[in-house]
Image (cartoon, rainbow, N blue to C red; front, side, top):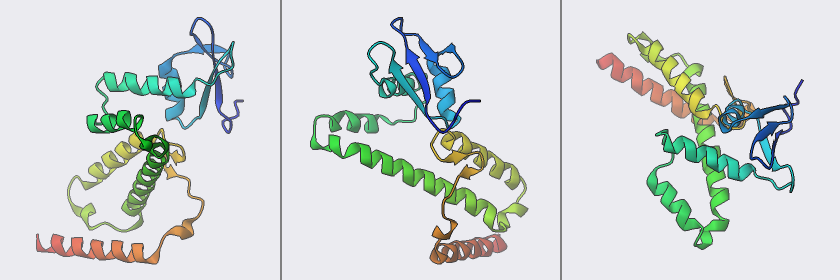
Length: 184
């Protein structure tokens, strides 16, 4: 059985073919993208030189998805990335992007938790349950490939991180929504 705690080692041969060392078969970029979407870390190395090619291949996967019309990165973001290579921002950009994705993942997690944590007055609205399920599917598909995100949301190390102020604010917003619905 494969050890999913360590990265899946993919070796690139001189012919540029990619070899999965766990299953002893050749894989494509789309296969590698699938492993990543399933939450698996991958490492791609050149068989002859031992060079780590992971970054190069991940960028190629992103470029292929973008060229197929699966646009996630707006043109202005891509432009800023290109500019960052010519400025002092090059050293700050990786930490900024990582922090941004961490915040996105955390806010998505809280939103999913909030949807299921409190009785929702919108549940009485016809079609709401279907809409909620669609939103959950969307969030899972969007966040599915990010580390720490499982089918039920990311694993939380410390549930005590929820602040009472946040819960009070959510309850306040819920009461406001109930009041608006009552007026309708």
